[in-house]
Image (cartoon, rainbow, N blue to C red):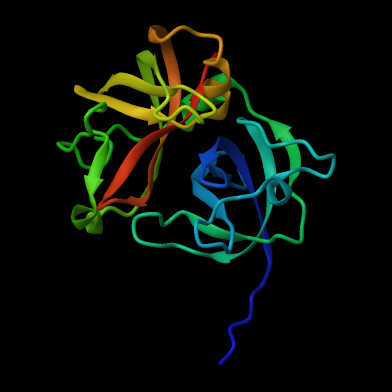
Amino acid sequence: MKTTTTPTTKRIICLANSRKRGGRCVAGKVMQPDGRAGGWLRPVSARDDEEVSPRERCYADGADPQVLDVIDLPLLNPRPKTYQQENWLLDPNRRWTKVGQAAWNDLVAMTDRDEPLWINGHSTRGGQNDRVPLAETAAIDNSLRLIRVGALTVTVSEPSRPSADFPILRGRFNYMGDEYCFRITDPESESGSLDLSYGVYHVGERYLTVSLGEPFDGHAYKLIATIIKP
């Protein structure tokens, strides 16, 4: 029996437009009728990697969505999978519409409750508490968090290959007494690193959108998808 699809539109506050293989990973919090931010939503494409292309995410004037934009998203239906329960299939035939702009001060009401960033105790060589074995993800039902950190440190290091467009960026921070160091996939941060020398930079207080990314090599990797500064 064929399943019918009823298109819908949801309004979100964009909290991530991060780099992903072949495109971007966009995510935000749904605006409720009373104007408060609700749960997370991640629009995804129908392609295997679910990345969002420039054509699929641009506004009518061709502009790319920016973090803190308030956007009306045309969607088809929920597309949850494993721990990424926030996914919705986007409608590729309708444009996204910017309807407003949030501010830094609005973020305090959007932060997620204080709790560890998924499962800790598993680290890569260059990171700390930055991955989860896939065998342990069955108990996880979310993949996006907005947190506030008092002291973010960013390390800029040599690219892993000569053809890479940007240096490797990692963000180190303490959250609820645990130390974390995640790869950064925020395009604005990557572009801003091109003129920087390799080294450690103390950037201070920031809001971070952190994500539990796609499975890779037996693990789900924790990423800093967006760094939001005052």
